[in-house]
Each structure stands twice: as structure tokens, then as C-alpha cells.
Image (tube, rainbow, N blue to C red; front, side):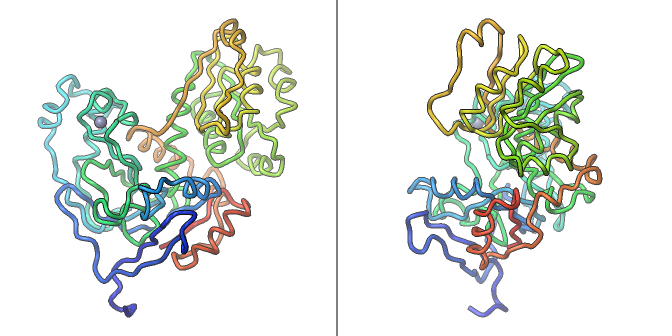
Length: 388
Ligand SMILES: [Zn+2]
């Protein structure tokens, strides 16, 4: 097919043990969409070392697929119907008029109901829920048993453009879409719909009544960067980031974060005669960090796990949990309101932190995917930028 008739291009992933693992396919026409769907052009999407692990673990029934979901996009065609406010209230009769702009399922519904003109820069929730089950109606769509996740949808389902390693993606009916403010550049905007929104949710779960709150973040990945910034943004007076990888921690200083190695955590936490930190947000998924985190917590503190542990054994001393009255919360996914909050945070801090330093300087197109994987494996950047 000559380049002049290529309308859309997608990278089709077959699985870690398939040869080839992927191929890049040029399509002569754009995918056609139906009522309720949105066609987006992918402006920038990301790749990380963690992604490589997730791709390798994809189930055989989920491939071949167009993978990738962390991205910033632009509307090509939006076929969602505008829903009047009274219809929204009928859908959720328990929500009053004051709830239209509030953080509950009614405001989630509002996100679904506004079509955007072509060219609108936007991002979207990576999981699509049914909006009907008990969890969805209870502001817990992340637990919807009927949800599907972009980047994990087999090619045979839908329009064949369900991931962001493609020039275009088709959003299914009921997918919340959020406009991206112009002040946020493409790189930080691209991580809003996975990393930043998930950390907004994690920090919300870590909420503590202390007026002079302190927090410990374990891990040194991109989630840890945003967990630290969001905790500070939410009024925590002291936020310490802890990881064994000293070279990665160096970058945190540029974001105004206090850092330490695991061996020094207790000295640091108790140095100011405090009774320990109010909360711990673990982004590492590393079981060796759990003990460090639990020990650093004050009585009544909260431990938030936001990444699956690398082992089935979760080393917890039950007496410590009971005697100190600790709470342990698991956080996975997010609600549409967390994505909007992520964008508000990025907008209000766009010129305050050197966000671009978290990303690869050069961008890769789909035919350079092998090279992008190689750079991701080197772990030199938190995210590799792909411009399909
Ligand atoms: Zn549901």
C-alpha cells in the first residue's frame, strides 16, 4: 500500500512468545464509528519497563491486540449524544442538583454526555464500566465486573483500534473523555490517564485527620514521583521518598522531595521526635519495602498499596497492625473524578516542576518500536515517548 492512501496505522501485538512479537499494519481507511463512540488521533503515548513486563504476561486469549493506553489524544469524530441534565438526574435519582459538579457518579455521568468538537485535545479513562451495576452506581466503577480496559482488548473485539500504539483509537460507548488544558504539554498530559489519576486515588485513600501530616512514599518510579507531589499538594507537611536505588532518587530532589535509603528510614522518621508518619504509599510492589513502611507508621496510620506485590507472601506482623491500630488499603484503578483531578493538578503545577525530565528526549514512531523497547529496558527514563 502506498503511503499516500494510508489513513491509519496500528501496531498489532501477538504475545511475548510469538514470532514476530508484533507487526505494524497500515490501513487504507479510518475505522468507522457508531453512535456513542469517539474516534481519537493519538498525539503521544508512552512505554515503560513495567509495560514490557505487563505485555509479556498478557493472556493468550487477549492477543493479538493493539496494546498501550497511557496517552494524550485529539478528537477526530465524537458521536456521543448530548444528555440533558434532567435525564442524568433520572439515571441517578439519589443525586441532587448540587451534585452536578461534585465528586460522585453523577459528575462521572456528566463526563459521558458532552460531545467535543474535532481537534479537542483530550484524554480518557482507561477502563470502561457498565454504569449500571451496583459498583458503578456506588461511585466504585473501578470494581465493575463488566469493565474492559484499553490496551487489553483482543483485535477481534470492537473496531480493532482499542490501544494507543496506533495512529487512532476508537473509544467505546460510555468511556469518560476529559479535555486537556492547553498549558499542559504532551508529555505530562500523556501520563494523566494511568499514572497520575491512579496516584490521585492512592493519595485520597491515604487521607489522614492529622493537621501536620507526614507521609512516606516507597519506590522510585513515576508513580512515586507523582505520589510525593500530590501528597505535598494535598497539604502534607513532610513527604519522604524511600528506595534502594540511590541514582533514581537523585531525580526526586528536582521535584522538591526529601529522599532516603530503606536502611535510614527509621532514623529519619523519628529524628524530629514524631511518633512516625501518618501514611505510607507504596508504589514499589516490593515485599521488602512492606516491613519498612509498616514500621515507619504512627499509631492509627494508613498503609496504601498501589502496586501488586512481587510475592504472594505479604510480610505483616499482625500484632503490630493490631497494637498500632493500622489500616491497610489496596488501591487499583481510579474513578473519572480522579482523572479530572489529575489534570487540574498538572495544570496548576505545569511550570513548577521539570516534568519533561521524566520522559525520553526523543520520540519514536511505531516502526521504531524495537528501538523504543531497547531504551525502555535501559531504565534511563521513566517513560519512553511514542508518537504514532
Ligand atoms: Zn458496572
